[in-house]
Amino acid sequence: MKYRSYSLIASGLLLLAACSSAPVVPPIDSAAREQQALGAIESGDLLAARSIYQELVQRTIGDERSRFQIALAQTDIELGDPEGALALLAAINPPLSPALESALTAARASALFALGQTVEAVRLLIEREIWLESSGEILDNQARI
Image 1 (cartoon, rainbow, N blue to C red):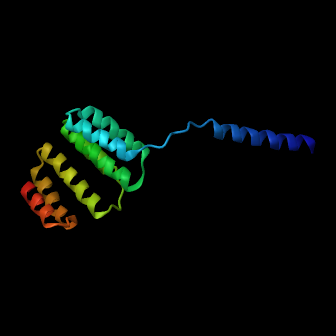
Image 2 (image 1 turned 90 degrees about the vertical axis):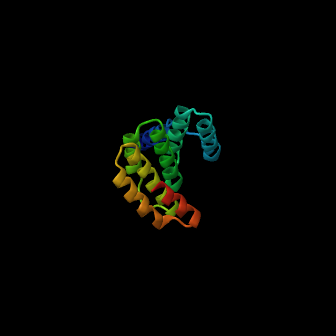
Image 3 (image 1 turned 180 degrees about the vertical axis):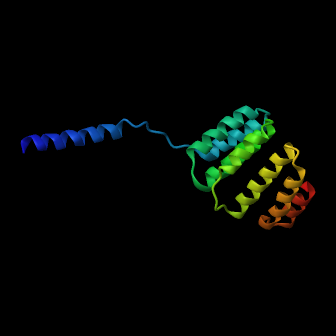
């Protein structure tokens, strides 16, 4: 009986030790990091922006993560990797808000235009109008078409 008690205590201590050895990831200020990424884009440092967006994708969840995945894909398109961008966009899980659906579809269309798949890109932009809310957004989308 005494041996069993020691065994249970030892097992409990091992479990606690295993839990405490996991690395602690500090919280991220996603708004500040996003501003840094946008600043990097403005200054022409797309690689720095890409790195920040990768970090944001890894450290966020839900709609916020989807938004950063789209931004990362758009950066990849600008860096000349539309295939990589399409792979990133394919990894986004629905359901999405109308605004994210619109952004996702626009990013896919941009990647397809970069690949020379004009017909498919235009089809996506026509489909995108479902999610647009203002006449200005619709006009901008039609200009892209």
